[in-house]
Amino acid sequence: MSLLEIRHVQKSFDGLEVLKDISMSVEEGQVVAIIGPSGSGKSTLLRCCTGLEKADSGEIHYEGTFGLVFQNFNLFPHYSVLKNIMDAPVRTQKRPKDEVRRQAMELLKKMGLSDKADAYPHQLSGGQQQRVSIARALALNPKILFFDEPTSALDPELTGEILKVIKELAAEHMTMVIVTHEMNFARSVADYIVFMDQGVIAEEGTPEELFHSSNPRMQEFLRKFDEL
Amino acid sequence: MSLQTMLQELSAGMVISVKIFVCTLLFSLPLGMILCFGRMSKWWPLKMLTKLYISIMRGTPLMLQLLVVYFGPYFIFGIKITPEYRMIAIYIGFSINYAAYFAEIFRAGIESIPVGQYEAAQILGYSRSQTFVHIILPQMVKRVLPPVTNETITLVKDTSLAYALSVTEMFNTAKQIAAAQTTMVPFAVAAVFYYIFNLLVAVLAEGLEKKLSYYR
Ligand SMILES: Nc1ncnc2c1ncn2[C@@H]1O[C@H](COP(=O)(O)OP(=O)(O)OP(=O)(O)O)[C@@H](O)[C@H]1O
Ligand SMILES: [Mg+2]
Image (cartoon, rainbow over all chains, first blue to last red; front, side, top):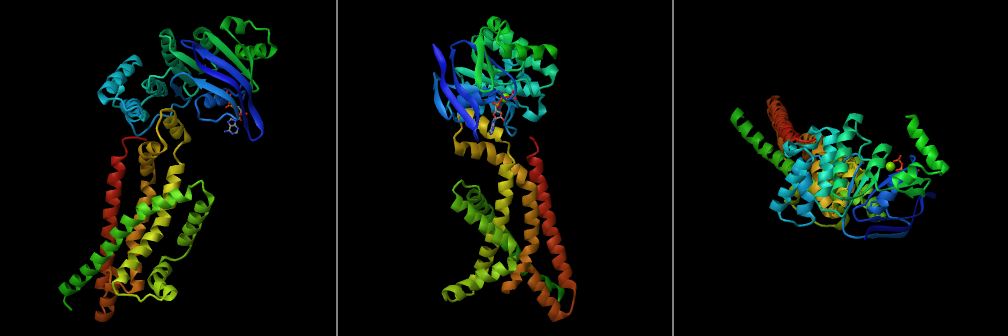
């Protein structure tokens, strides 16, 4: 069953066409990685999918709710870790506090942050903040979780802890769409990879297919990563 | 005049000064918030109107505004000015002036909140009003506390401008006694009063800031 279906999505910013006729679908339990050079429209696609940006034309169909994990976390600084996670389910989903608290503590345990429930975001490392923001997104029980470069605001030694959490979620068959620059990670965690270039999906397929693609742009993109 | 009667008269003036201060804060803070919404409105006529209002209020002397509020009803509408109107004019004049300053402070505070806070709230399903009340407003209060404190300290000293409408607040009282008795003592008392008043304001503000320092 498709949880997300995007058809012919187009988006321009002041005359600059950033997304040109994008179509893709995400199946239940699938992990889709979106890769591509800077400025190719990956973030814009994610923002259109999550309603932060309105597509100029095209259709976006959902089954159920979604969550989004931001590159720079966007935790609420005036709320404790626990309140960051609990506030939306209680306030916007009107769920009982006790039940939400139980779920929040479970999520914190899963993120290895049980002892940080009463801390405030500024007291946490970037990696810890990102794990809290993942817990915050999961607390709403989304059907799909979107990630926009969840590790690129982090020090290199902290990226591993986030990638590990995402891998664990993948093992639990959480449906995820992940924009990432971590090629090895994309290759190992994704069932399906979408390569974007200049506003179009230039290539897509399984990691196996993509990393052995004959598409010259894809090869050039991968070569740049090998040089790093 | 004995020192005791002098102090008695001065403390009557003191009470009026404090009244002006309290009423002005009470009215101008919410009014400033409303003006701030108008100033940030996407509907341009409202935005331009509040912008013009704020620029006039900040660009002309408060003393002049007090005179306009007091004498305006008579000169413009021919309404007879009653003695009770004097204090009301003071409250109105001070409030509409300070509201303009607060509106700009609030606007700067709201605009300094990163757009990511709004986006996170939207994704998590908060309505626009929930986002403002629960996410933006608390963070804005913390950010505007120092400039609001500055304005409040200015207000303590500005209450003396009420003498323009012959209101016998602290400063006017001191002036009158000093002239009649040819002594500097009432001015010294007035100075101490304003200074201690502002000291209290500063201590209170510091306490509030400390209370909000649990997050960054
Ligand atoms: N709000 C905006 N206004 C104007 N132009 C924008 C806006 N958002 C994005 N763009 C432009 O759209 C293009 C695609 O941006 P986008 O952020 O989607 O790229 P990206 O693939 O996510 O890049 P990166 O890997 O650097 O994050 C860029 O040229 C960018 O300058
Ligand atoms: Mg991006």
